[in-house]
Length: 518
Image 1 (cartoon, rainbow, N blue to C red):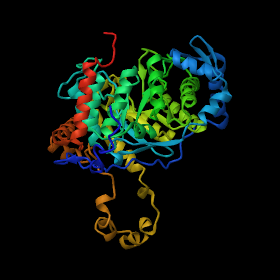
Image 2: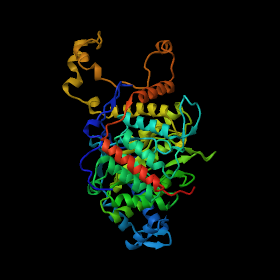
Image 3: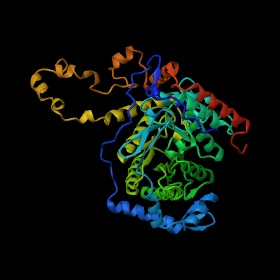
Image 4: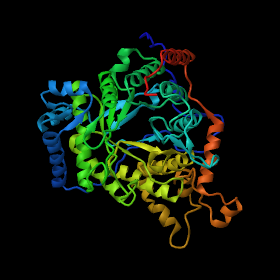
């Protein structure tokens, strides 16, 4: 590929707002929120030190298994103790490496107006990623994911302003062969969205292909691409105490070209981690920072995020549980540790429910609010997740976006403003003890934007709701989903860029795409 793409910026600033022929809903504008609340910190200072010391002892005395030969060679070069695949590293070296990591950084997609800031008090929400199955009310049952369903979920990702980045495949399109699946889905992602995108670290070809497609979509030279983050990858450790070959390989490729990485151990207390939440968090922290230290050694200052996916299993069945009290506390505890290490943090929206029902919403609400409470910067799977991540649902996506909008509204500073007009002494004096506030000028000047307006909730009383058809929440969400899809317009893209993307996909398919085991 040439490096002469300065001529165009796909999407451009004209793509800053969603383009729709007819608005399916009236939603809040694109405005990634700032979390001004103080974090919830269940750990004392002594507790933070205890988890830190436990994580350091794991790295020094037990070690982490790195199955990637390049990684073990790099650790050996850095002076760590390497015995086969086992790597032990001293705490002084680890802390020195973590000290290089930025506490905050930006990622700029093809539309620069969709730039996101990761770190500080910023909190960002992304779509559900990676479920192999799909469910909606029209089909009425769980089915394997398809490219068409994946594309529709990408349309929701683009449409909703409360979704700030496009994570992995919102449902795995198993109707496309694994060797070329990434090419088709990333093509859809580049053309249907203009938000920050993700690459799976599942082998050299997939990561390199996605980086090339992001370059093409943004009209970037290699120099411009590598100068700052334009995309990211997210990996999971293989708990307990292991990092596999392709995920570390993918991260190394990304950091060497200036792109962001998130390291998120998936630790389930009682199964792949100790049954105590402090033990599970300690293990998770050790696994995450071992990889981040490696990436900082390779490229000091590489943009890295520490992730948490620490929950528990149902000890009666062994099934994962999400949105539990333990999950919430683990997220808050990890937030304290992320601040201790000076790293941005990733958490998740999640639930164990099988359909978009009450259980799905209270568990997801717990997960989302624990992200807020912990000072999380990036919330993965914030919309559309069911059955412990095995199912994606458009109804759940819409219902979750209602919660995300409420969280964004909750964070808007005007709600807690205390100026003279906000205290409203004169209005209170005007109404006195015997009137009401509906008709006074103070209310008339503000009522249109005074309160949050829902997109999925129905605030009518029972009789009015019944007369209107008695539509339950999931069905209302299904109708909203259909309206969005029927009125959706993709963000603009230069035709030359589209042609270049199409040609790249065709060329890579001719070459066989990525190798697979089948």
